[in-house]
Amino acid sequence: PAAILITGRQDGQPFTRSITYTVDQTLTRDAEPRSTLTVRFDTCGGNPEPADQNFTTPYGRVKRPSPNPAREGFLFDGWFTGQVAYDFSRPVTKDLTLTARWSPANRNTKWSISPDKGSQLGGESTTITPPPDSTKRGIRFSQVSGGEDDDHGFSLAVGSDGNAYAWGNNTYGQLGDGTTTNRYTPVIVKQPDRQTYPDLPKDFTYVQVSAGYDFSLALGSDGNAYAWGDNTYGQLGDGTTTNRYTPVRVKTPDRSKYPDLPEDFTYMQVSGGYWHSLAIGNDGNAYAWGNNNDGRLGDGTTSGSKANPVPVPVVFPLPPVITGVRFDQTAASGLTRGDGNSVSVLTPAHQPGTVTVSVDYTIGGSAQQPDTSLKYTYLSAGMLPQAGGEGILLALATGTISMGGVLASRRHRRETHRLLYASHE
Image 1 (spheres, helix red, strand yellow):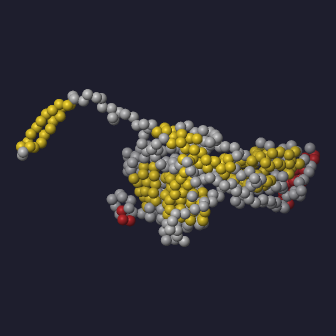
Image 2 (cartoon, one colour):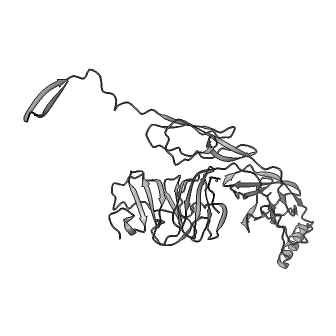
Image 3 (cartoon, one colour):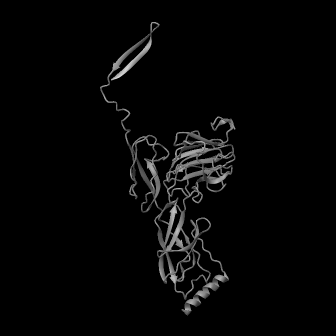
């Protein structure tokens, strides 16, 4: 039962009426739980298979599964809904099935090793050449953003592989590839430096990007905002006015000014303006930094063309990047990176004979099945390879065979000493 008191005026006179009202059904509307939304993953033959993700609260977002699935003979292009790359920055509003898409790996070209012989004592400098990357990838953009002024137009995108891409003018380093070189096809934006940010997750990806005026913003899968490019007015939010050519982490709001800031504060969305930046936090507040002309920060202070539409062909430069070399399962030492994607390694000691050279490498940051097509022959210590004691350089350079050796008397003396020592034994 409920007592209801009604007051009002009728014909200019006040009145009061009291009535009773009985509710004969339990009120359950507020107690009813929100229906659970489920996101499932179809790897189409890849492993591992990610677990389902369930969402009982509004505005939940899918966490990109880690690690990426792998499939023999294929390269992982990302998660899709139909033909469209899934945008992990969007909230889940219905049940979904995200499907893995794959591109056949290019197996028509060969790796090479040159020279392919050396002393059984090891210590030879060796050079490997991967095949040119001519694999046609199925990577697509899940999100794009354009930044422009009179002279410095550029573009940003998030790829289905979790990388951020950029192209166009790069005067202020706004493409985030560590240079100021203009790019006419997409280049991969560098990930934040792990030495500077040791808490960066191993499975870090970019979730959202926004292009400002000569600078760029991005939302990371770790809930932090990152920025790079022009920083004249502090629009990168790192506490400085120094231009950055690779991503730096935007500071979180000062807890001394905002004591009610959640302990688990993260950014949910970013947007680049003219010379200022905006972001939404998981506390529901908007935050701003950079130039404050016209009060654009909102803190109360002021202190060619086509008529009809036509990820445009996109070229993804994804050469193999070697991460390790093994000779008959023994790791080579002294891996040193050279020009492009070349590396030099020192061969381990081994009994005379021919062994398999296993090359560990990544493409677009994704680990691939090791290449085992190369062979290396260890010669008896009493024999010298046809290099005449110059040593063997094994170089890895995409699309080209790089052979080199430096005729050095000290190297020749070391070889002679080692052979004489082996003979005495």
